[in-house]
Length: 470
Ligand SMILES: Nc1nc2c(ncn2[C@@H]2O[C@H](COP(=O)(O)OP(=O)(O)O)[C@@H](O)[C@H]2O)c(=O)[nH]1
Ligand SMILES: [Mg+2]
Image (cartoon, rainbow, N blue to C red; front, side, top):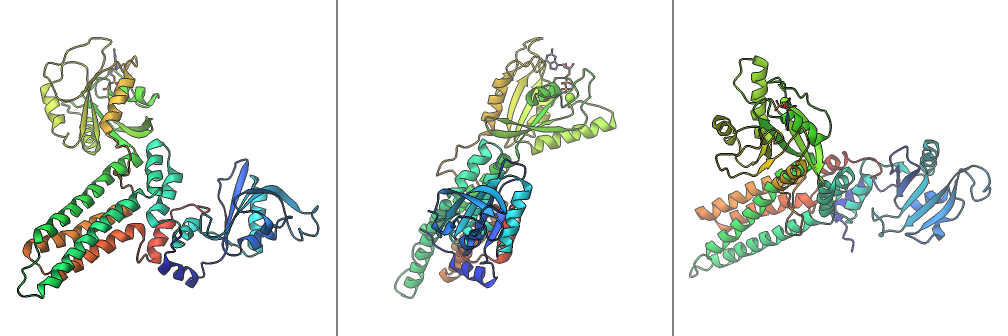
């Protein structure tokens, strides 16, 4: 059931934000356009522009109505603006938790503007970006991490970003934080127990090993979550894959083949690619960002040298490296690349197998895929190897991925405060001082879901990036 964020509903009234709002919820240009209205006067105001009495409409089901300008109830034939479908939602059973109406009109810019104009004429205010979702948060329909997931869900472009947003919307981040909170509260109560006993001179300090064990466990949990942000970012922005190797091994040909587009210049002239070229493709619903680089070789050409430096910085930024070779690799080149592969996945791509299928002499511990970039053979196997190397976790209840920079920042700060607790436990700091740091950890973590004190400034920052109508 609905549990209003009480401290905040006060500020909602206080700021005069309790007015009834309206906005177009769909992008212009479609066959239909949906106008959303929310607030205590939603039905009353919409009723001013409908021929039928919307107060009699059963909630949560669509009703056919004529939208009209003035005096609709008396003169039904004149001033008809559109024939529309209206859905009425009654508080608290609506997205915002308030009385709300959705008007589905024809998508004409004239009609939509006219309806908005009439709604405002009758007492609605134009909604601010994200205001519907903000109200949903303030009325306890969603916590803050779920509200943010709404924006991510609307922005999602593929299976992976959709899955992340959907799981967050369904409360994965929230329940992970509930688990952390429970552990922290347990730690707090153990510490308070210690405080109680410390009054008794004849009793020794409670065993601090248990406290340390629990604090370390919490620290690991927070660290694990914070680390997942890297994966979350990679999924949101495209997993960077650097295509590297000597000149003329077919890197640019491979890029073009993967992109199914002639993006990079292919030539048998050594050192053709001098700058990095980037583009993205989706493999099995995950976006990968491929970076074609200048071939690695000794050169006196100044521009090419800069290109080669960029190759190594592309390797540093990549999560996956495709090392393309077209003959027995020079040990030197391998050594150069291998130095940059810590925490990265390397795939060796044997290209030009249409010409010769040479054997690799040294046995290396990396996947080797043989392809002909020119003829396009075995590219699906390479795509599969790239997808596997990305190591995208399947999202389960136990595996939460942090995608939001605000959450990440809070996790880092929580870990910082927790480190004071850990230090204090080691150095034998008194329980009441430790409790203070623990309270910090709890309050920082609660920022993520917006539990306790969420300032209007924080809310403003979150919702300003939403669209109007969301
Ligand atoms: N036979 C054959 N030639 C290829 C293959 N891939 C690329 N090439 C040729 O190798 C030359 C260099 O290719 P390019 O993609 O520019 O190599 P890069 O310098 O590594 O970017 C070009 O003439 C390509 O047509 C392949 O799979 N088979
Ligand atoms: Mg090239």
